[in-house]
Image (cartoon, rainbow, N blue to C red; front, side, top):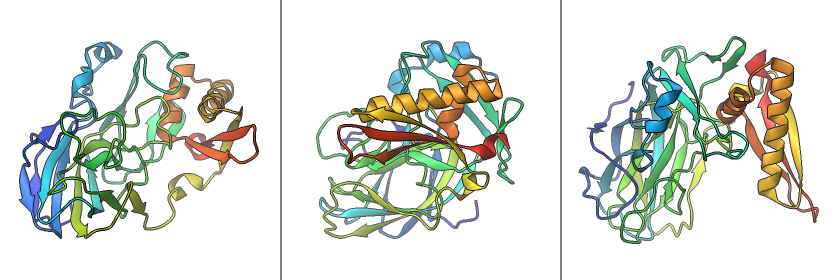
Length: 314
């Protein structure tokens, strides 16, 4: 990785869930440049030899391991931890799964499915999905955050005020993320790295992929931040925009149901026009399609749109 880090936190120094009682693996001064070796969301459960049967043995209590925590000297409640994400070193292997009971359309896709990915870590060209689809890559960290003030163990699955499982694909190289600090030292951790994901991660998984992340940790004293915010270095969809989009909609008084309808309509379109199995179209939507709220002011109905990049099948 073409960065000069002050310290490396190795993948063995990981934990599950958020707990401010977890002992930090390292103390650093503000301004430290760090390298984190991150496991994928399944902690290495899936390999290039895995089959769909391996989904059944995935332990829910060990998903989304995060590397850390790191204690930042001088961080106090009320401050913001400024995280400058500098670079990702991908592994070249990833997986996407339909896990029964999980995902936006879990009731429509009750059976497990698994897709294994191989991608070029140097050129980072679009990676193949089946015979015709090619998914552009955009490495980022799905889970990134600091410890909450509330005592005890807290699940890593839902996102929180202090970050966590945000699954924001734009937390990529060049982005600066600000996290509210709730405990002394902040106790920063990161993991759940992805090679690509659409906004919404609709089937519940992206291209889950282990990789190494380089970043810098700084402090903004008494920032008064109520939730995470971030700044991107430039346009965020240029890697997908070249050939335009196909878009479907869901219209009604419930945004969640609108999102489900927009996604279901896109799956139907992909199946009809490109011959994919419905579950494959569902997983493909999760790694490269975007859910967007298009209208939320014209009561009683709102509009949710699902954008699928035409470049994938170009």
